[in-house]
Image 1: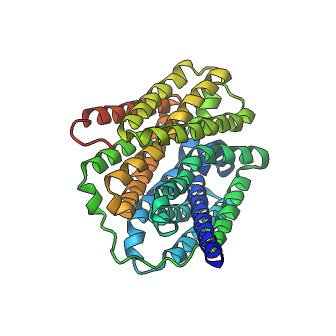
Image 2: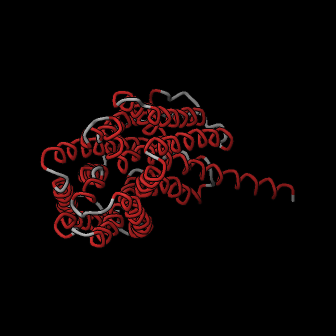
Image 3: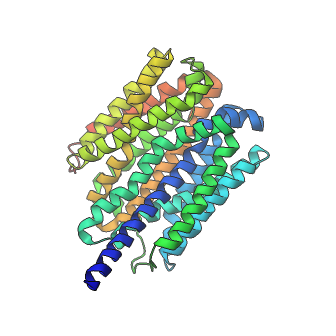
Length: 391
């Protein structure tokens, strides 16, 4: 009986640790996305344009892209538990510094810190689940870890916008900072020691697989297009659709709920055909982005299109991750590091390109760019279908 109790307790601790790692991925991606719903008040408070304020997202993406593939090899001999705790604390501190920032230069420096922590946590999380639960449960545990990323991608922005609307944009960063420090403490309390694995991650190994190269190309196009448009969704809603500022947070929450639905629906579809699921999502994203400036000239129409947009983008991360893990199960950490790097370079590129368009040609123009890049992703999937084996 005592042995059964010990086994049950061990299993419970393993799943508790998985849940905390999922909370960590949720927190870091929420922290990265936070400025999206707050660009207007940030710009007004710090005396910069909305396009310039969008650089707060660009610098975070670039620092995360640099950190993801470099931290694991650089700290190859360090315990993963300690490294995750340190990186989460860095995210919390970066958010608190962002809340205090008296000017845009300090905000930019703070966002660099958030990016380093975020890139490292996301990259390391991929290889954690296999070390926390029994072999038969690794798939479920890995899905739970990455659900934090998917949920944050669609709920982080509306949550930040809602808090910012109620209490001001600085309060949203304070909340994210406290959350980051709390999760760092939880990781320290729940995770077991995780000594480094013998093999040093080899980033070139996954690139030898054709499906990985296609997946990364599709991620680059989809995520660049999405963030070229979505980074400036608040100005689009206010200037194109005529949405009142006090309703923006509510509409983004609708988008977030739709994204959760899309995440689980795509996860179900991706287990059967990751490529087919991504093709559907890319097509829906391209059509929806173009329709926002064309038809979303009222609050009701904008809300309907945001639902479709949320469903489409909500399924992207889980579909791509499923594809990568199936393509190179022997190189999960390296493949995830590459995915994080490409994902965040695309976030930075999208935010930067969208900012230049928004400042130069108006908010509506970013939607057409987003639609064009999503269409290019769909075309890439269609053209390469016969050259690589589907998952």
